[in-house]
Image (cartoon, rainbow, N blue to C red; front, side, top):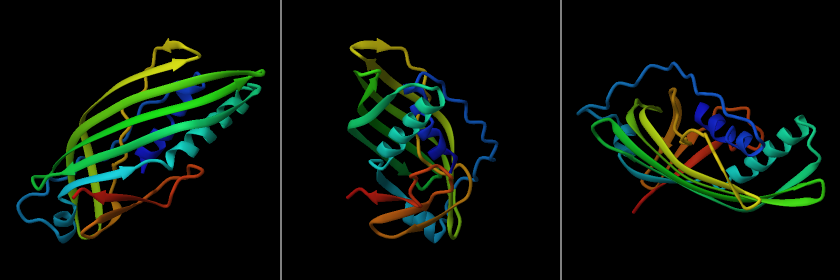
Length: 199
């Protein structure tokens, strides 16, 4: 799941690096159409994905980046929240929104530097599902974001962060949850993402 890798890559910005562009060349899926598969019928609706697990991935990536750059310091998280809401429509389109808020403290050479990052990512596109897999293609996406480090606003150039499979990915769906397998070698990444249907 390349989107998971892209999300974790956001932490490089906090360490003064930039994120590379996603160059996925997967073909767009065929719209769901009038004859929905059993899985597609189950997926139609609005789902929430709690991304609390990403906090430790951000922190560990930041620490790794600091070690690689030879920076003498430590980093700790104080607050993190992110919930992605995705609506799959029966016509094969979807919309997604993910607000994210993070506070962390980096101690550099004995000086604590608080950093805050707030963003709202949005996107839309098409999706398809056969008997066991889901795939999405994002047609448009955007992000509104701000970062403050040590009391000073910083320019940020991070792209939208959206966790959806951009290649056929195994999914199990029932009345309340949809579990999507994760294909990544990122440390601390979960083996699956559990989406909860909105009531």
